[in-house]
Structures are given as C-alpha cells and as structure tokens.
Image (cartoon, rainbow, N blue to C red; front, top):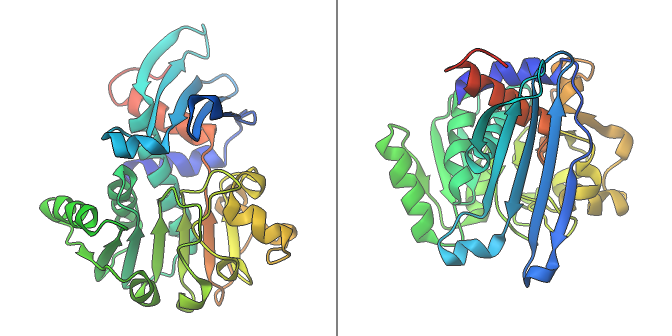
Length: 296
C-alpha cells in the first residue's frame, strides 16, 4: 500500500482528463444496485476505464459488494495493454487515496486509529493509514462483532495487532483518526464524540441517501474531498450543505491540498470525504502495470 501513495500524490498534481463518472441506479434489478463507468487519460499518456457495480445485498449472499473490471490502453495506439480486476483495483486505490489525504490532514502524533466497518476495504484502509502514521493501538468496530473479530485476527496474523470494541461511542471518543467504510444510510459517527484535532476519513457514502457522519462532524471542520462531485453525490456533504452546516466555499480539493494551495489549520478537526475518482484508478493501474511491463 505504501508504494502507491507517492504515485498518487504525483497524479493529483499532474495534468489529466477525468470526465464526470457515469452513475446509474439499477432499481429495476429489485435492489439498490449501482453501475459506475469511470474513464481517465493523460496527455500523451495512458488511457483507462473502469466499469464497476455496487450491490449492497451481495453481503447476504456471501459475494463481494463491489465488482468490476478495468481496461488499461496505450496512449500511443489505443490498444489494450492490460485487464485488471476492478474490485482489487478499487480496494487498493480507495485505501491509498485515504492514506494520501491522512498524510496531510492527520496530526503527526496520533495514538489511536479506529476502523468503522468490517468489509474487505477495512483491511486495506488500516494498512494504508499505518503506512503514513504510527499508532499505539488500532481498533475495529462493526455491527457484527464476529466479523470485527475476524478482521482483527487476519491483521494480527500479518503483524498488525488490532483490537475490537463493541461500543462505537467509546471507541470514537478515544480515537485520533477514524476511518469509515460502510454502506450505512444513517450517521454512525457523532460530532459530539470527536476528540479535538481528530481526523475523519469517510469512504462509504456515494449516494445522497447514504451517510456515515452527522452534521456536527462537519460543522467547523476543515473538509477536503477527492472530487467536488462529493458535494452532491454523498449524503455526508449534500445534507449538511443543504442545512447550512457546511459552507461550500470552505470545502477544499485533495489536488489543492497536495499542491499546498490550501493550508491546513492547526487547531481544526479535519474531514476527508472520497467518492472515488478515475484519475486515481489510472494512477494505480499504471503503477501495477509498470511493475511487470513497459509503461503503455
């Protein structure tokens, strides 16, 4: 995970084209399925497109919630260079982007990292955050305590001791960094629980009816997004903006943060909200391809 952070940092500050992603609700399939199509390309560089689906009900079927495929194309000839598993790429990209944001937004000496959510992404997010900061302890919370224990056991076997806390409020009150990756349609994290100068990493909500944090988490916080599409696509921001808990003019982009156009206030709580950007998919795909082949 750590090897992806610098390529992503360069990608967010380099010229590229990344049209607004196509986002389709698949209500006719009998549940809240979503189809996403995300293209991106660089001037005189590689071209890539991801087709992904999100089916929350798959968890009950024993199937991954996110599936898809990524096609990497040559910028010189337009020919296909690689087909990459879209779910694997999304897991890597999402966690690495959160780690990149935390490297600028999280305090330098955090003690406790809290992971909210027990899906496949939780393991990657923990690894990503550990790549940019040292923590005295890592805690995971999930609605199903058995799933939280399974994640903790898996990471412990890799040499990353992770504890489990069944009390979300208690866990949040002790955390310096909280990373959330859930399919929740109701706020899980309350602003009243947050420590001073804490960092909140919100990954799960990608629709207006989904959210992981309440308005108080946003009120007065220094907020950064991977794309300004998050202001309308995610309930974590769309609702607070409509209720004037957040001022649109006070939300910064990850690109501006990386290029240091926007200074981070020392005394503020910070929030990073991601909904996924095709530019990051392309950067990770290029990195994976370059490890085994000549760059396209």
